[in-house]
Amino acid sequence: MKVIKFGGSSVASAEQLKKVLSIVTGDSGRRFVVVSAPGKRTNKDKKVTDLLIQFYNAVVYKHDTDELIREIVARYTEIAAEFQVDDDIENTFSAELRQLQENFDEADPYALDSFLASGENLNAQLVAACFQKNGVRARYINPKELGITVSNEPQNARILEESYEKIYQWRDSEDILIIPGFFGYTTDGHLCTFSRGGSDITGSIVAAGLKVDLYENFTDVDGIFAASPKYIHDPELIEYATYREIRELTYAGFTVFHDEALMPAFKAQIPVIIKNTNNPECQGTLIKKSFENVSRNEVVGVASDGGFCGITVGKYLLNREVGIVRRILQILEDLNICFEHMPSGIDDISIILRERQLTRDIEAELMKQIEEKIKPDQLSIEHGLSVVALVGEGMRERPGTTSDSTAALARKNVNLRMISQGADERSIIFAIRSEQERLAVRSLYYTFFD
Ligand code: ASP
Image (tube, rainbow, N blue to C red):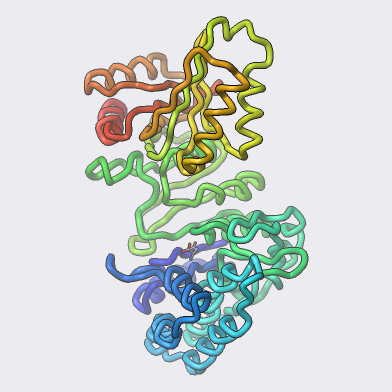
């Protein structure tokens, strides 16, 4: 039994939906289908979710919405026409969008969530109708009926544990269930979405709840590559990866799979496979806890991400000052700032943060508090950093990975601002200047891959 999820580009047009239909009907184990909202048909196209944000803004600012509603609904009617769906999609979908507009309440913290979620919600209804038209016993199911209960965090919901038992009740459904991704309901009944790209999370939750054998995530690339095609021409496909490797790679910038989506599948030990709707024969990337009898590279991937900054706090005899790290972390906590890495020397500590957390005021406050409460001899902040991560469970058994990578970076004159290696030696993370990100990824990739 499998849960299968299709991303926006896989459901962007009738042509794509025909591929989806043939993939689902090609395997009788594919009984639970999670769909995104229609994505881009071409590079210049807009995702329905982005159109819905425009629609929401038009409602907020009391602009005319007729044209936008028409544009959104047209994305669905175009598909419905090709599948000769008899239902009056144009009128029912327009009415649903108008209803959103009428119910809009500026003071409601969940107002945007309902607009965002309607992209997937309407799509799941349409996909069910298209399947039925082709003789498939499929039906739309709302996440509330399915049992997806989430935390009270608008646009950033988290799943509540109680959901899994409820979802399990649907295991023996006779119909193929078509489930809209991206949202659930809070215990007090508010519709609440996950963060952007969150249909991957829904798929993982449903797979964990139903305890299926496999979660198939269909997208528009052959799987997860060992490095970003942005930097490497034709990079190797990662055929087998562990949950932890994918977690590290998505942390450091891989975007094929939403970084929160792995957790439910990981906890329930459901294998995940990333596959291509446009090339379903390709084996894709299989993600599991561990692998036996398959040969895998010691290093599985090189990831990178920008938007970091580093704060360096230096103080003579810092190593002898009891509680100093706790006091620094307390300042971060008081200002609600997460840190990513904290490498230390004898008399200094660096704190690597995501830059987007720092407005000018927050940065000034942070530096002021460190100055006052820590009284450092040296305090500085460096913006414009990237992290580059070398990831692979097998690195533990490969002597010299760190020296090979630092040598490769040195040959290209990449200046290292920080090196951090987790205790389990599953990844080595380098902080470098963002201008050198491309160079760093290329030199590491060509050191560990052909
Ligand atoms: N449609 C939503 C978005 O664009 C969620 C998703 O596609 O996963 O973010």
